[in-house]
Image (cartoon, rainbow, N blue to C red; front, top):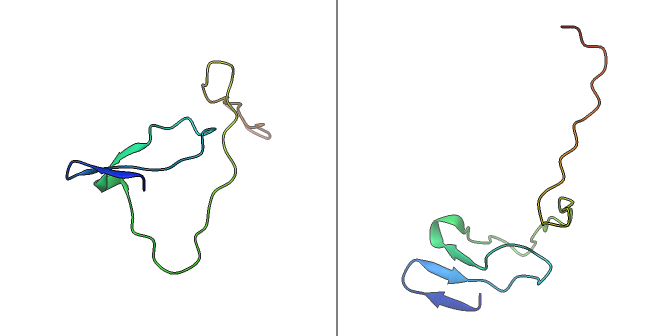
Length: 64
């Protein structure tokens, strides 16, 4: 946490490569319990405009 903003928001220290606004309302945050913290390291692929690239999965053995 970098700083508390008002009574209901916090500014977090996030990696520069993450395209997320660093200020969050307290209702979006969860308290960390325990010593181990699982971090998701797989991020969605982004195009040049910063939009998520969505590709449909292969559909097999279907009838309409």
